Image (cartoon, rainbow, N blue to C red; front, side, top):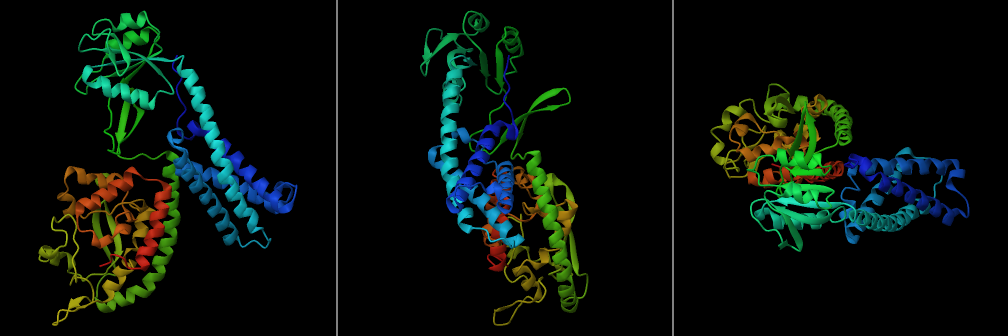
Length: 484
């Protein structure tokens, strides 16, 4: 009988509960140090802080993936993860106290000491719990024998992979090499116990709990062998695809109709993470739309005076996975900007035509080159320097066409020049800001670097990364870093 592991946050339920207990222990100890032998839960005001600590801890655990790969982390990595987690919890509590402007005179010493104690207690608790879990798994591994079924060319790599990543779960007791007779020999210290025609016989006469079948991609699914082994009561794992190391690919097993499928994608988000990202988009979209209304009253008259015509500029762009939508901006260019783009293409800083950026763009409202060669900038440049023209995109965010953080949506002519690997940029909703925008904006003229940054964002995405990009965006915009 196969014991299927829990998935999602339930996989680390023990660490979550342990972490909450450590946080409460740190809070109670800090209160005792400051107030004497008593409980913070006997104090009505501090009782609220204790509950908020639990909520903050739970939210950070669920959204940031704190315990992802926790058993594989070393001591330094675990301490860094613990410190980062504690700082986030402390930040939420401090922001709450500052925003709520409570009249109660809370002890800052208790709040800060809670964070320090939480790091110490939590780190050692995680360390001891991991030691116990790994020892327990090692004990179980003595009763779970694994047979590796593969071909000679893949045998060495497969054995090393099992020993490195699954030695705490399995005891690799034998190898079956299907494409040559190697019975009686050893590979990486593991005996070869079967060949092409006697795998079933070897399993029948040996202690085998589970079998791992790894074959080349051009080989058909070994349905007959898998059925025979499973019919003998052996749990069979068949490797159907292995993403290359460093490719950033994510894999999961799902169901489509009556089919069990292995799903491979460049990035992955849980339903909870998707909900949190969309909730942040809606909240940010509402706030951004309110600011846009205020900016409209200021910018609309200036735009109409400088360049008669529509206040807003709309353009068809390519969004997530090729879906087209209309993007909204305050118009920062003259009415004939699109017609003049072709004649100015030779001055494009992106020579491949996959993006269009140029110095002293004469299409921008008020921008022109004086006879002495100096550039005189106008209203359009001011709007672009501080990204004021981007604010109407918050309406796109509310509509669901865009996100606060994502990748830059290409124009149709840019999209038509894309090569296959460029399309990876559109695996997520395009964003008002993104990793490319906060990493240099217009200073980055190599489109492949833009693709690399966007792909990095997609493969390493987390809610924490979104928040860091939003904070960096404010600094970049105010400092006009990389603006044109």
